Length: 532
Image (cartoon, rainbow, N blue to C red; front, side, top):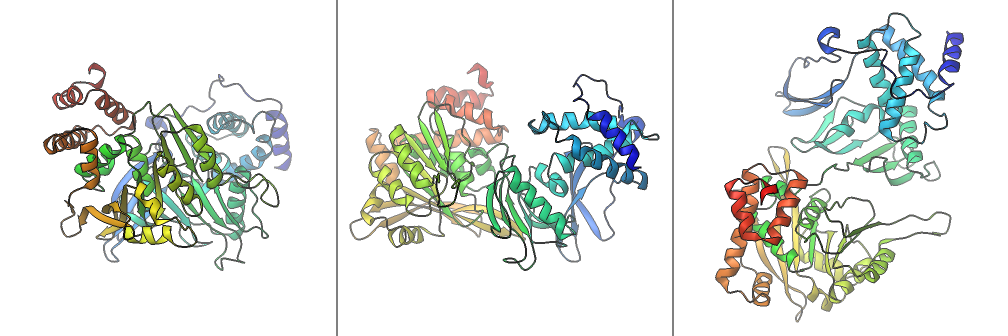
């Protein structure tokens, strides 16, 4: 067997095959049969099933009525004994082939294409390999060499926001947008396999992970954020990781209204605030949707406005062209040489004359510069970890941040978000929206919108910020109310008509900026956006 493998290696290492080569294995589901099938285990009821990589893998959401618990099952092709042997041989051969010059520098899609051609060459040397067997084997080759191994289906699942591995022989947990925190049927069954996985992730991101440096917070190749603890020295259960998924398309204001995170009236309020350059802070606990809200209201900024964003990890996505995204950088050597933190980015950004300054999250000394930017007339939006407006003020005005209370006169709105639970399913809600109304006797706040958990609705208490906008624009109260109602109706109409696509929402909002009445009439009448 070793001799056969050596011969195959020599043959396929001679060149990188062309993309136009005719496939050796032509798979046809109607003739060759399906690659995957699944029957739920006894006692479990299938709630939902959907593809994540058709026709190779799908997800089955199962419910145990006896234990009242939901499970996340990954369904992949099953290999017979012969196919398992072929897979092992092929993996052994391709380990050397994929390091060929010209292959290692390709992107994921091109690497998959080259990998498929080379897998065809390998398997063509074996007799008895049909198209169905080839597709099953190639799925695992691609999954393990180009993607993320066992967790690849989870990384493809658009409904998964977070992935948690707490150690070897422990089920991997996911946060599912429809079902909350649920255990999966996937686990790393050996410590060396788990260690190898996280070391590979660290290597791909150009970072160091070892027993001397066992903690790593970095960005994965496709943009998701991962935090790793390596070995058992700091985590008794062994190596662990937590992945915060990077969404391919950020949420829109219509999404947040559809999920009742905000009401349409609250979104209309934010729209008017953003348009009139008010400074806004989104606060809440971990995974309460702060960044999602920040991304959503960013769509209300007129497209011609100059924006600079500052983040530790790229999470903000905007439809604007006049936009400079910046990120921090860790030191490139011992002694923090070359380190660029948020404080550095903030100082630099103020020299770039931004009309809107968006900071992914403030935590420390950079908060003082952010408030200086507000007081200097820059419009800002950011997020902060805190559970109430009072807590926000206390944390900002006391050590170690120490923002002078007088500077709070420049901050206009504080939105507090929370994680609510309904029958075990997590839902995100804007718990309270407050405004800064004065700093004479300390920082004074006024509650504007309040969430009522008993009936899942929102109460409006009046707004000083809206009154200020009304006076600055020369409106009377009826004109202010009419403007808010039009914006709210516009958002609800987009939701009713199923306009949820990110690009479509951005175009409609941009058209509304230019001609509100005509655009609203066109939307209500059902006129296509290209004809407005």
